[in-house]
Length: 230
Image (cartoon, rainbow, N blue to C red; front, side):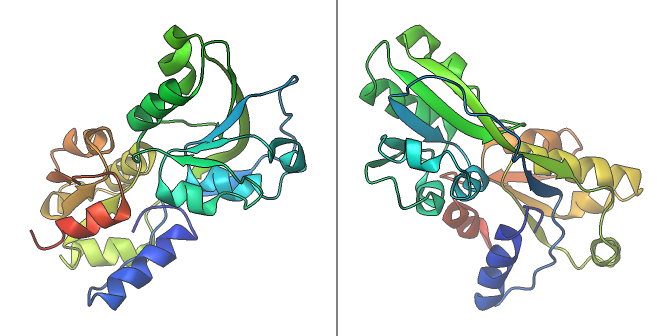
């Protein structure tokens, strides 16, 4: 389980409840950016593309000024993690492409959208919406810091052939795992692991290593669980 905490432990607990073992080794640590400044001016809507951004927004002093705006979330988990202050919440199909479609359908030309995100982003919402006449202001409230090395438990387990599959939720966690495995001289061992991925974009850095990948039918945790044993 390579996703950041606390989601890594939550997914690991779900795996154990289903009768599977789980090794937790987050490849990224989430760090809030309390010094971030909200862009000036009025907004017509807010969008969130990550659970981390949704959680951290709840602790921001800017939240009361934004709570009356409609919120557009990339998927169900992000919507569930968002502050309850947003009473009008629209949920996309789980990835950036689906969110872009939803925003283009719901927001008129000339609208000004606040995009709350981290320093590393899988999708450029501003570019997606530019030709629709929707302006996007970026508000970066956290960063993700990559792990320096694989955890000893991971090294031991993969060397012993005890890891059958790995869940991958983001391109950056996947790329970090690939880099740390190569640095540890364990890249060939991960070729015997089935890498279950949120999307084709998540699978790219793993496939580039020659590791076997499978892609979920939908970009959700349930989609990854559906791949187990197939």
